[in-house]
Image 1 (cartoon, rainbow, N blue to C red):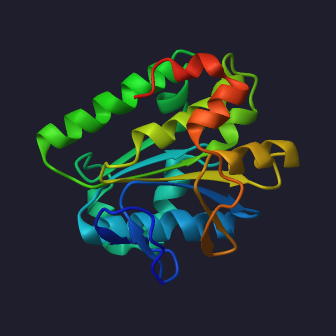
Image 2 (image 1 turned 90 degrees about the vertical axis):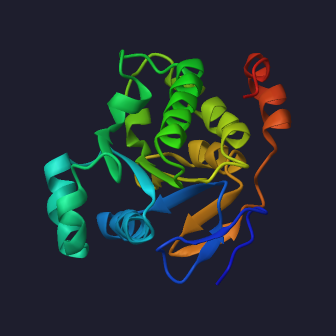
Length: 218
């Protein structure tokens, strides 16, 4: 099934039989490890098949645990897991709060640098997925997470990029999940992908909640 998400080229998500278009920001919800891994493993395996650059940030597991389980799912991926032209695998801390502080402006610059560097090296499609449970820790600046998620809707469109932000429904409360829904235009839950009726354009969401984050849109 195709979900029309932009005017860019189509891709296979590796989740069910879904296809969509590049330039999309998805929130993925799960309640157990099996549901989580169905999303991550399918998404990454398809990216390997298609020759995409893949950024995966883990938090609820170790890298060794991920590699052991993923190699059973995709044996052909084993020899490429340490090739950062194909897989970039890192703990969530290294991406989101390497200094111990979560700073959305730093994230903007970091993602832009990552994207520009990857495209100079070789024109490549990018798949990014991250386990977001790190945000439940007492990290300075974490209160700006949803503002950062809203701002990703300025960064991702028109780029050959797909992001799936993974939220464990057994760990995040209902109030937070409603905020997450407001800043992701598409949702993946129970193996089904759909356009999110709760989504609010970042111009409006940020103006209502964090107007200071409108000062630099891209």
